[in-house]
Image 1 (cartoon, helix red, strand yellow):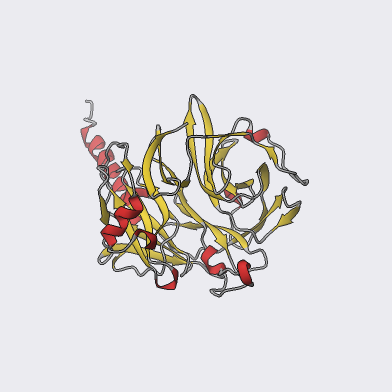
Image 2 (spheres, one colour; image 1 turned 90 degrees about the vertical axis):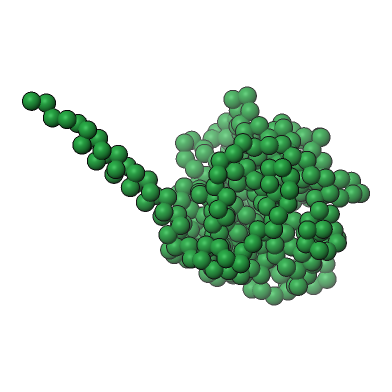
Amino acid sequence: MKRSILPLLLVILTIGMLANGAGTASWMADLKEGKPGFQFMGPLAFGPEGILFVADTKAAAVTAIATGDARASEARTIKLEGVDQKLASLLGTSADQIQIQDLVVNPVSHNAYLAVSRGRGPDAVPVLVRVKGDGQLEVVSLDKVKFSRTELPNPPADAVVGQGNRQSNPRQESITDIAFLDGRVLIAGLSNEEFASTLRAVSFPFKTQASPTSVEIYHGNHGRFETRAPVRTFAPFKVGGQQHLLAAYTCTPLVQFAISELKPGAKIQGKTIAELGNRNRPLDMIVYEKDGKTYLLMANSSRGVMKISTDNIDKTESILAPVADKKGLSYETITGWTGVEQLERLDGKYAIVIRRVEGGPLNLESLPLP
């Protein structure tokens, strides 16, 4: 007599449901309800289930916040003129007291989030603002949310160094960019160690400290190896089937790091695959596909927005000798994209940018990927 397979199927389905439930719950396992404190809000990144990672450069810490924004919806194009003026009105101040530190898009809901400073200097107040699909701005209340936090060991000193126009506070660069990839938060910035430039990969939920990997690069425009210049912006990217980071530095080397080498206490050397021009600071970078090819799109302080080809990136030779201006991966400048200060991918067809109108306010708008 044949035995019914229905009980077996029910068991398999039940186990699958439990496993899926456990997987979902694990992302929230260490999040406790309360009010996270922020001295500053800088780089932002989204993880699973609407969890937003917020870097506090002043405190040298990353906080994971359950936004509750996990309902899937289609991306909608947007044009919000004078977003700095609208933020000022929302926060009860003037536009010259508004600084937008970062922009990120929730890949599930397609709502945009802004890390905003209300005021300038040490008394500036950090505020998290959501840009809904219809363009409405709202302050995200953090009085009672689920969150967890990891602090970076060995951060740079919180003190002003240098003289005159070269004064700076290295703590402001304790975290320069973050991303979530394959269960880990990737963090670029500076430490107080001899090799000050660092990358960190910390597992989430946060169980251990984000101990640094010290990184060294060859800077072709400067004609030397460097260990103290921070990564300005980066993007995860697969090279030869393996996950890497493509990291951009001031003046403007583009460097490839294997994520598998990011181990606590290690010292690694990146592969410089492009020199994209001196006297320039990269601001933001995304990866996208178009017409069967993959590109990097990088916003810069003085060289516009670059569309960088990744063709044959795995065959690109390492730059290990002085470069007068440009070498390595080729790019074109997207002439219509002027004044871009923040850049994020909205979906497979559009990017969302914050850009300054010449002599005018800041606009937040979606643009077709070039």
